[in-house]
Image (cartoon, rainbow, N blue to C red; front, side):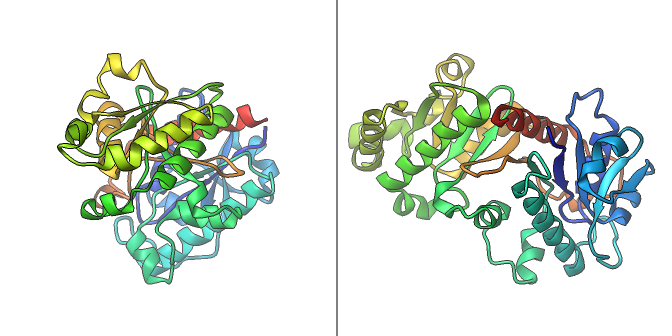
Length: 326
């Protein structure tokens, strides 16, 4: 299998540190071979280990025996950990662009993305809601045909609506959207996680899943018809379920993924159960893409306290998914 490409993210965030520390722990963490993409100085500012710039990604495995392999991007100017700037955002975007290209060309087995600052990216003209949408476009996949899944040792969740204000969620929910998300998630679990017949538990939107319409009709008018359509297609779904009873251990044993109606409904249980091991997986792409489920953490960048556990989990999961695809 080819090595994985790991984009460092914003050079002023914790991405460079956690990628370097993941490489240092690669044997203990049983990580597949990977190489970083970004600026060397962003790593050297927070880590005193060996770094070697690659001539070609094909050299990554040989280099990784003694140094962190790196594909160097253009000089982004001064880098101060914790001090985000526009040059750093351009570096992060260049790193992402290169990483996607290498994964698409099969020079890398998959892509792991470090955390970026959306505010800084928007300031340099980035027009996508996030890295996921950018990657989807570069892969020729419509935004609606990919799905975000959060995966940890205890739980997998997938939100139907993602970065949508809570007041706007009822209007954003449609039967078609739920069906599309569920299809992508089911196929992704088959392709990347080796689950032949995925079981999807679908949350309701309202308390007590609407209580038969007395607490809201979305379950009856939108979610229920979507589940009927999915069952007719042979997808194993249960619901709509009351979200407050879906995430205890006995309930989790009955499904492979929880399909949730909005962001916090999906992310709060995942981060409660698997905060340090949660991985963001993009399903529906022609390439493997994962990322740690946390942000740039500018406030602790450069202090030597950033924990690489989530980055290790993202690299390990990307390797496992890529191996299944092979």
